[in-house]
Length: 482
Image 1 (cartoon, rainbow, N blue to C red):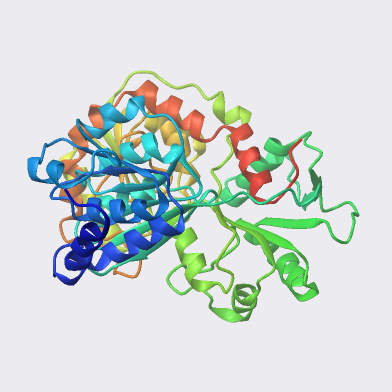
Image 2 (spheres, one colour; image 1 turned 180 degrees about the horizontal axis):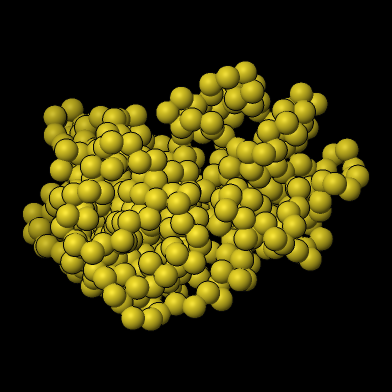
């Protein structure tokens, strides 16, 4: 049984021996010691390499380790002190239902399947204490692990650090929420209610935010004079002149979710964008999608305060009628119809005779709603999109969407549709369409049909609940609770 110096010697030996994770063992040990960890959970045990690192650290801190694996490894079980270690042989998602209490460090190296890994994060993640960590291995060798992280991670509450060597490691640190700032007022341009009927997505977005914060005394209209130290928030690209003036004046500022950039393929182009990207006095930089948030973080000097904001659902949208006769197998929504996207759409429509095609800017809102009501699934095709509000309308009708993340950021994999593996998702890599993109999307059609249309609608209503959106806005903006 390994304890004391024998355990540390074994860890030193494992670190020095090339293997699939030896380059990460010292970091796992250091993070656990630095956290003064008392309660550590490990999902995936195997031959006990990371178990060794965790237990060696816990001998320093006096903590306890719970390890869970679907298989029993007798050699591993016999190697460590049961007084400091519990080895549970069970599916993590079964055993984890009974878990209660804070976790200082959570280590995940289990099935590597996207859905199961995301479910483990949803089950155990909320138990990780502020300043605690989730450590996950194989983020490079098993991209589905990283996909699960991005699907679950909320940047308002977690920081993410990625290491690409030795099969990849992710360290997620739960943020310590800052104390109250004493700030009471955030000023933003309000929109008139008729903006909700606009054909302009940014105008609808501003109107939806205006409706969501109506009656909340923490939010005021910039058209009215206020204190010089009031926080200013400019949400959409039409406010670029005001943003520029606020930057020049050194004001405390929030921007987005629809300000940067003019061209996502060339972020920071032009004097205005370069000036804003160099500014570091932002209270919040809001975006509507994860990939766009990563884009802004890479292009901007300010690395913190980048937050996701879900579109707050207007009351009129929430009341839209869903249901009705399903008349066709599919419809195709296409935006930015370059020859590549048009060719993908053509191949899909050839596989689904009678499929309806709607192109961005070429339809009325009622046309889109009726297409979603009357089709079994939607193929959503776009080169990239910061956040298509059309996808929210489609999901409200209960219609499952088949797309990839850059085409359709609002898509929640296996909740409101299927995220098809048609392009490389990892940042810093090419985002070109796969040569067989249409075939890959068509292959996901049976999975989309198996989804419950009522559940899709309910998930969309939940995700875009305006009350939840306002709570997140206020927290990101540092406003005092009501």
